[in-house]
Each structure stands twice: as C-alpha cells, then as structure tokens.
Amino acid sequence: MTAEPAPGVLAPGVLAPGVLAPGVLAPGVLVVDDSSMMRTLLSRLVEGGGWRLAGTAANGREAIERATALQPALCLLDLEMPVMGGLDALPAIRAVSPAAVVVVSSVAGAGSPERLACLMAGAAAVVSKPSGAVSADLMERSGRAILDAMRAALGDPSAGTEAP
Image 1 (cartoon, rainbow, N blue to C red):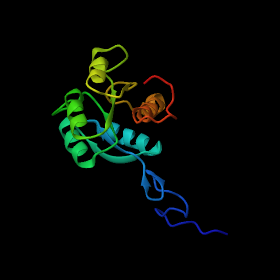
Image 2: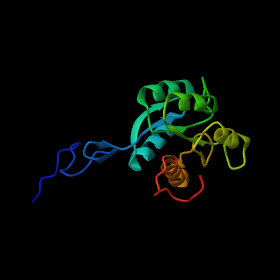
Image 3: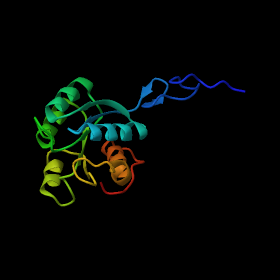
Image 4: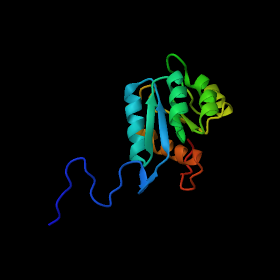
C-alpha cells in the first residue's frame, strides 16, 4: 500500500500548477479586472488551463505597474474599470512588457466599436463576457474561448479554431 502525501504536498512525479516540467514554468498571466469575483474566476481559469498566474490588478494603472514588475507573457484585460480603463492601459502595457493582451469584456462584443478599438490598439484577441460586467457563468460559457485566445496569442498551434 502506498502512503498518500500530506495535504498540500505533491505526490512524487506530480508537477505543481503552472510548472510544465521540472525547472520550467508555464507562461505567466496577469489578470486585470475591477471585480474581485471576476479576478478570481479568471485566475482559476488560467491555473486550470495549465498557465501560471503571475499576478492580478484591479485597474489599468495597477496593470501597468504589475506588467512592468512581473513581465508576464500574457495579460487578460477588462475594459471598464475605475482609475484607468483597459483601453487606455492597453498601449501602455504593451510598451512596458512583452505581454500579449487578450481583452475579456462585456462591452466589446462582435462588431462593436470597442472591439475594433481594442484590436487597433494592439490586443491579440477580444473575448466577450457572456452575462455582463460580472459574469458568474464565465467559465461555462466563455472559458474555452478565453483559453483558445490565450494559446493563439502566444502562437500555440494547439489553439482551437473557435473565434474569440
């Protein structure tokens, strides 16, 4: 009979979340949203998808500071936030960090002027939140599209073909 590892201790051969192989970290992701619930949901999606959560921010100004300090590979960015919105923060994030930016927003739906503005400002993709600014059903309704957009933003050939 094999002994179970203590709680919080990984079994031999099991890699920690965000670790691709021993000594190899998964790309880091910065999650930016003013809603703490949305930050939590997106953080769970990131980690559950095999990515490494580099950090979180509650507004565009914090996002620029964290992108500078953390140098994430990717940033999930909301648009409507206090202090500084995502559309204003997007070019500044791209100026201080190599991060590809995937916008996750309720106001940037297909064909919207906001969606076009995000893409013109350098967003790699735009994914709509399914039920407004605070979308408790985000994982079920848009989780796959967000993960596919993240993979595509970093040039991963395993990214799905589903349009974000």
